[in-house]
Image 1 (cartoon, helix red, strand yellow):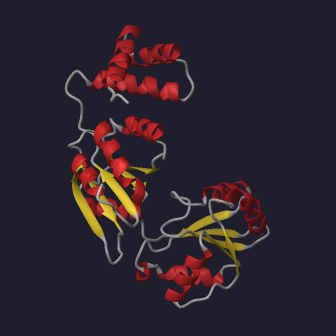
Image 2 (cartoon, rainbow, N blue to C red):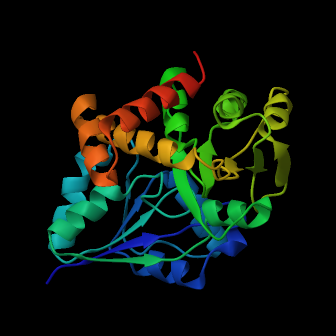
Image 3 (cartoon, rainbow, N blue to C red):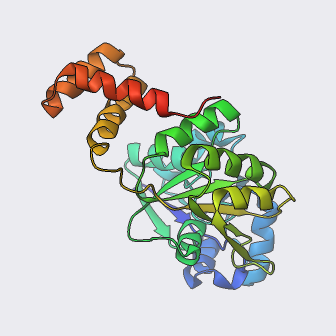
Length: 284
């Protein structure tokens, strides 16, 4: 009989936000895999419980090496509870490898729902919440960051990002350049903590504010793109489809031909749309 992998959501700030089941799972676990064992100790003290099993570290630096060990324990019948520093494991945190390994071994995977910085920031941002997409952390290198933002420039759903405080100003500046200086956004800082702050405004204004220095855990929410003007929607969509195929490794000529066939338009029209999109992009 195989064991169970429990992905346990932890508070993003206030320990009293912990779901009651979290304490029970920590107590019943054979193994608690923690991103930071010191933070786990503080959390269990706040909850007034003691982990019932062995505690092991499971973080970015040892995730690949430790996953087979934990997968073997799961296959042998252990109940493993995985916790990260805040929020849900595997969502921009360690955990995906272990979930994939557990599924491969036929191990049951369940979760203890908990607070979410993504949903909390989205809810308090004041921006549309009916449709959204989570983009996680942007690349650290400026060129790669701009490339990722360009991919999302035409996205109409509200965008949610995580960012480190020391990179916030650079990221907001890049967003203002790629998305437009007047695109509305909200910077959510230290959610549920003592110094919680939500700063709303145009991207350019937020970038200037962030230049003064910002501390704490950061979630950025950005309004989605407005629908293109009449006559531009088709061209923009054609260019996006070509870009997607090129990103997947297809040659541009083949991608253009394939998109043209799918859309039922001449290849020249798709080619012109790609050229127009390239010329419209911001220059480095």
